[in-house]
Image (cartoon, rainbow, N blue to C red; front, side, top):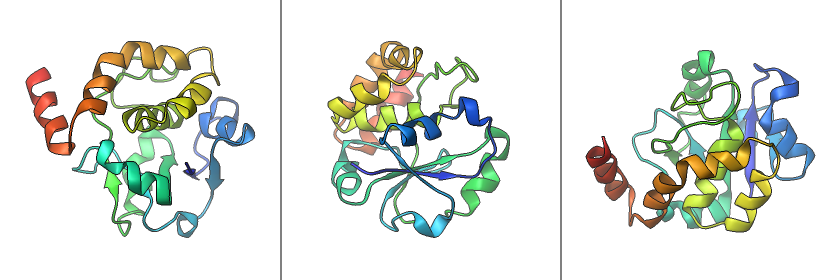
Length: 167
């Protein structure tokens, strides 16, 4: 599974989850948009379609791309990616990263990848990513019920229906 991070250098390098994933060989950082595979799943908080288990095949073939940027600059960063066809949002999840703890939807890049991989059943990779920080296993603990709901949903529409009932 290719995990690609479009990195725009807006965060503290010591706290950057994407850089740590790259150091451990779990993700590839790119600094130019044209380095992202055109058909990859692009995680975009503004996308209308939620990531679901139906995205497994595309993810396996072309990868999943996350944008590592400051949440203050998120709209500008994502405007550069409008030409990519497979834009997906993540359904509601609670972040546990120390910077945005408990403030949905402000997931770290690591949390976003863990969520996607859990939803499509890539449990071994989820386990490896969850071991990178002391706080990262808690992301799964806190969000287990939601993640299981998303994993067991047949399609994005069912995820949206369940979220509507949840709230």
